[in-house]
Amino acid sequence: MSERFLRIYKKFYLDEVKTHLLTYGALSGTCAHCRKMDLKVDVKECPECKTPFKYIAFQNIREHMPKILKISHEHPEIIFVDYEDFKRLEGEEKAKGILG
Image 1 (cartoon, rainbow, N blue to C red):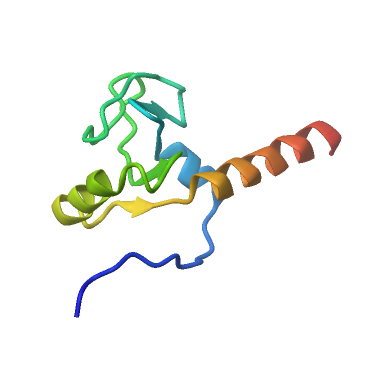
Image 2: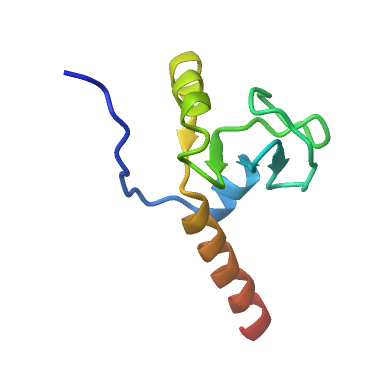
C-alpha cells in the first residue's frame, strides 16, 4: 500500500486561510496576508508581517509534487490548499464587498 494525496473538502473561514497562506508560483512564494514576494517554500513565517504559515497553495500542483512530498514529510501540520479554489473564493468575497 502506498500513500497518496487526495482532495478532501472541509469548511474553512477564508479570512483564516488568507491570513496564514503562502501561495507558491513557478519560482517563489507570496504571503497572502501582506503580499510580500520572493519567499522560499520552506519559510515558516512571513519575514515582513511575521505571520506563521499554516497553509500552502501551489499554482501548479503537478509541477511542485516533489516539494509537496518533502513538506508533507517534514511539516505534517501544513495544510495544502487548492490555489484555484482559494482565488475563486477570494474573488467572490471581493465582489461581495464591492456590490454589498
